[in-house]
Length: 253
Image (tube, rainbow, N blue to C red; front, top):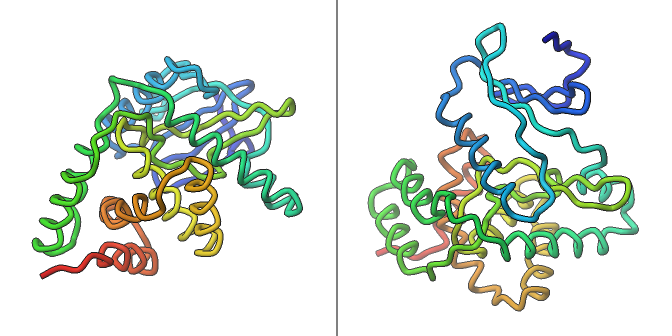
């Protein structure tokens, strides 16, 4: 198998994504943990068991350079992010489609996925916040309603591909869990705040709460928890400062 640089679709710190015929190839850097790669493939395979439109995993293997790779179906189309940028006059329509799709995800179940609550407990414990803050976040997380809804974990407009016939496909299920849908919404809100600005994030959150009949305060209660769990990633100083601001929304003794 020979893959050239002109086939590159995306470059990330831990991987390169290539178009290879009617498939997509994610090739990871050599020191990327094998467990993370296999878990990503397993998560997506488990979500495949629902009736959602997602690319199918075809194989997981090591290439000639001894790099782990995941091959999956290639979905022809444009991301919702691209469509929003190209057609600003249809912004409201695309936002409604985005929220509707997220609500559809939350109606599904994938009982073999990791529990969102367990994952967030681990991330809070490994965060850089002082013990008093971590304790309060653990307590808050334990007090939140326990659900088992399918949560994408990184649902944003760039992870939705719209095909020529209008079918929406959802990609990148590496962070999928089962848990409380409002935590998933809080994660999308924070992503939009960091990548599209606070006005866009607030517009999304108002739309989601209105369309799903969810209290805004309920989602906001998840913000410090989700922000703390996101702080363990490789964020810029500006991003970490914003996440820290959300974590410190809670009053501590």
